[in-house]
Image 1 (cartoon, rainbow, N blue to C red):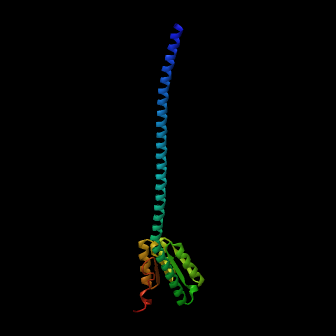
Image 2: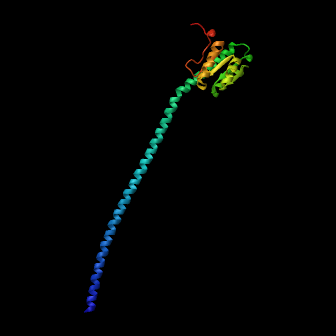
Image 3: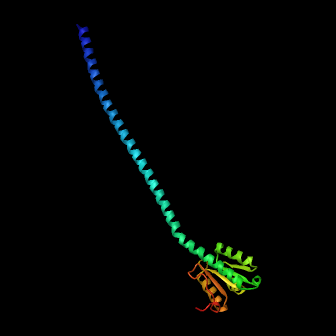
Length: 197
């Protein structure tokens, strides 16, 4: 009889263990399902975040490209104006070179530091046999350079205010031709050489 009751007790305990195991297994299944749903949710959120970052970076790149294009477009009129002024300067120097006989004894002074304009002027002056002088900032030497020159090219954006007025005053006093670059009036002639009307 004890054997039967022991067997019944074992069966009862086994059944209780199976029920507990079933509950635990069901609980684990619920937890695993919830964890899988959370992982799916987090992966979806990560994907959305990555997508938002890509869209933001793309928009920023486009905006930067647009800004660069606007900056370049804003500079374009100034570049065109400067190119026209350089062309006017070159034409004026050509005209002056043709007007003056004996250009080999003439000297052209370029006051200021714009290498492009000075380089073009140097080529033109030296191609006609003239001497090309430059002055790039030594205030003491400016007066001597002005006296040595027959024609002065003054790059107004590249010199000090004081140097600009000294050049202009010297040219006005001596009657020398003075070509101002980077101003609305590309060429300033002394009063003696201006044509009436």
